[in-house]
Image 1 (cartoon, rainbow, N blue to C red):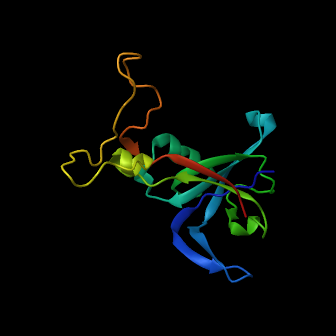
Image 2 (cartoon, rainbow, N blue to C red):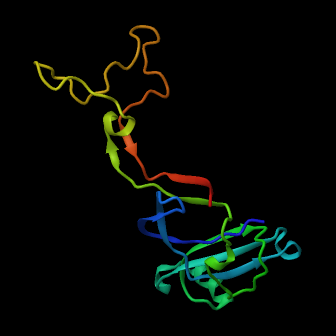
Length: 175
């Protein structure tokens, strides 16, 4: 039974638990989400619920998206997501709120990390860098890339500069 919902991150704050310790929390805008389609085994070959989130202008959608959303007469939405084995009885057009979850439920959160662009090894991999003074010209470089003649190439997986962030991240078992 996988209940699901689409949300948008607003920011972060902190709350205090029963022992007085502060806990960082993420504030989400959880809606409104609407049921845009209900898939059945007889018609589609599998059971799923499609959720629509994020109002947008109709002209920004493709013709296929417009026609698909017109069947549910909901309007225009940026994001559509299917959840199999939804676990809640729903009908097309029904609004979903965070009330489908109860206190203590474990949730899996999926989102994109912050994109940081092309970064060097110190920021990307936490390398220490070289000396800052005494004639050194080696400050933020990666250092040796491996042995010399054999194998004569950079080994796969070597920590090198490159694009950092903007990856899909999944955090499981949050309560």
